Length: 488
Ligand code: BG6
Image 1 (tube, rainbow, N blue to C red):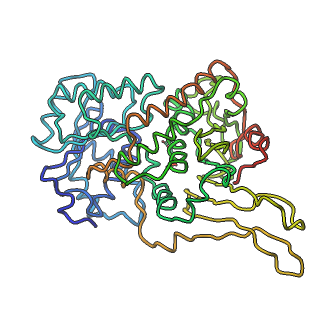
Image 2 (cartoon, rainbow, N blue to C red; image 1 turned 90 degrees about the vertical axis):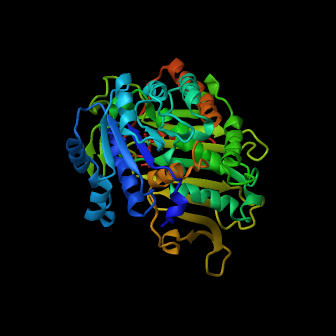
């Protein structure tokens, strides 16, 4: 619980959500704000203004929130009285982002002199119009903050356009480009693991590390989001942001402090060091996949092409695996294998750091294999495991792999806040460290664009993989070729 003074900026807080009736607002933002309210992490003066195109009055809006949002608060955290108190903070403002008059109405609804946080969770194509009209309506001042949901644009050019337009009205220090992976407890803990300990750092480089794997596997399919997803695909939806951010934290040099720019400077260096893909590299080092009918969670589930709103013959990828390189002294010749997909065998996000084997095989009784791995499990449970070799009890000198397993669940009994809750609190407190800076985001697109364009040029169908599997066979071949394999 934070003391009220730490939150007290002296200004009333108006949190204004664009896309306030949308899926993200209902599933994530309102539940996260409820949790922040429950734990005393919102200033007492907070009001949440949700905007949407529906011509709802307040009671119709509240009924919608009851029906579509309340269920996303875990039972143990739900308290009727607190919920009713939270609902008191909510205001609904009908708004069409093309209508200047609606922004004037919003200006009337927002308190004069309030600190305004604008949360833009609409399609990114609307961000420019929204920022221009907010400024025209006199809603942007130097206390204002704007949160931009991902994906920010669909390529470098559109991201630059958005950044330019937003930058006309907001200083960089007022812009919070969100990547919710940076709000995950486990991802923040990666920074502590790397930079709060000294034992890993001397080993954290080539040639001691032979490869790094980053997997973000989802069990869910595209669900009701095909309208968005089909024009996006796994590369833009997951790799360009979430997976690259994980890669940055694994690969970055130690920052000089935890200030936003110190951390973001180091991540930017990693993004700029990512080797660019030429067409031949794309054909060799990337794998696109699309799920077909299969069994997930003991149920037969449809393939991507059979999902609602997916156009017939769509070539959108629901799976990507690729081999990347960070061209620096530290990571010279170390492959970074990235993999993500929907409808995979189970939800599992992990980073596997594979260490080089001892230079000389002293124990010939044991067949070869990777001796040491550090496995950092991010979801569904947090765990850090170090795989090492131990002697098998007996008269010989046979080795066997054993695991040092850090049990973080029992080491820390505290509640773990959800990513959106933590990041929204950061926005309210003006902490930018866990948000992306403009140059970082653009550097990520600079790397991703040639891959996406190259796929367009090659114009191949994605490889089929059965729902409920670990992806297409080609993704396994990608590692096998280098003598590695995915660790499930
Ligand atoms: C979002 C993507 O950014 O992240 C979704 O748009 C994806 O497609 C989600 O399902 C995954 O987030 P998490 O926190 O469930 O791993």
